[in-house]
Image (cartoon, rainbow over all chains, first blue to last red):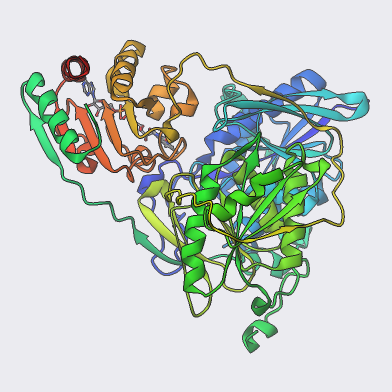
Length: 273
Length: 352
Ligand SMILES: Cc1cc2nc3c(=O)[nH]c(=O)nc-3n(C[C@H](O)[C@H](O)[C@H](O)COP(=O)(O)OP(=O)(O)OC[C@H]3O[C@@H](n4cnc5c(N)ncnc54)[C@H](O)[C@@H]3O)c2cc1C
């Protein structure tokens, strides 16, 4: 009975989202000069995967569709405990929206690791926050999927997995049982990640442990990837316009401040003392 | 189809789309554990507005088992039509089963737009549905509009921390999918005299669950009785500046006296002073109460993202330069302990 083969797709996120520049013509993110880091919530996903590996054996493989500079944060995933890391990179993948990205990720996994048991994603990325990828990849692969996982148990002999997930907006835990393979996304406030071992990370760099795969290997159809495989377009960008506020400020004695505030709120009709 | 479109080669895994065949706006009405989600009803209101601009109608989609009279509810909130699937296999929510049924309905009826409330379940379902229809989707829109000429949905979404608004379109594919966070749009009034068409739909095949699917549901037992942040008219939000869990307690007292509830910034949740479901902001909840009171909150863009639509905003902060004052109608500069103590005292006296 073999252990689990777990794929953890990860993303290079922009660390400081508020300092981001967009190209005024293409509306794409200007990536040059912007340092990239491992999306924080992907670390919770990697932790989730590593815990399963610790319990049931097998291997954890990280994979990212990223520019060539993505090698560095993939080395971090090895530093955290991943057994292997793959950088999926090609000019042809550029300009992809979530559909084209999910296509590239799904088909890469199918070609490179056809016998995987689980694909484990982070809940969302901190820079684009769509949470699309897990469900879109599930759709390309026609597999069951479940979001917001906090824990899982595996019955290796039956290849079954029992996943518990937390729905924050309902305050409910749900438990699902599926035959593997399935796709999971991990609740971002769960599975606090272990540290990244710098020694392992440096070893990964020195030994060139991150494997690079381009579209000469994958042979994905041009019309399905990058800009051409993306049904959505950014038609326009603009600065967010805030609502006009009264901006009345009170400085001084707290007693008077409290009275001033309650009087104004009563006048506004938002409290009824 | 234009000549240019006809010529352009598309991905061999995409179906060809004839845009003219697609008509009508759909809202997926989320119904779980006996409750219709407010976020879905709010989208019916928005869909009405969009439908009138392009001269079409609004259809609500409902799934479940033994649905009964609840299928009439979307009509009361403004839908012209309800298409529902009532099937024992839908008694329990299983993501890929629910998503698959919606895909089958969309393939049969060919709507031009499908809207989802961006609840936790909605965020899970919508991308699977979109992808299976080989079309685009935009998450967490804060505004929606429609171009009467092209019938393209203008999907407005804050991006990169909320200081940029992106207008996203899906010009060549149909349907066009978008999700919208709960409470971005108001809930339309419920009018039980409204009439509409109700269609019981059957589906060809329910996909395999591949296992037992949902086997257990366990609600979290909540110690305190204050309502969730997205449900209250008055929300007092604790920031890192309240200094400790005791500070949060003091604000909870204030919230109680005002008949409201307590929420927190990410820093307060990270410190463990409040549970994660009380976090307000980009990675927490979006709220639009009539009164927001931020105490010891600096006003970071990611926080403001989740509260800027509040009717009246109050800030209490010791730093006169705190960014939160830029978003406030009423601001008090001072140590929150003194100010909140006085507020509590005054409110107690009012009560007497
Ligand atoms: C990807 C990402 C997502 C995020 N999502 C969210 C989110 O959803 N929600 C969220 O809230 N944040 C979010 N953040 C964090 C956000 O950037 C801020 O760090 C956070 O909102 C700050 O919380 P705060 O205002 O409580 O604390 P601080 O910024 O530390 O501010 C504390 C304030 O308290 C004031 N203060 C101190 N002492 C007193 C006193 N005695 N009396 C009165 N005032 C006092 C100070 O002047 C200061 O203004 C996110 C960040 C990132 C990068």
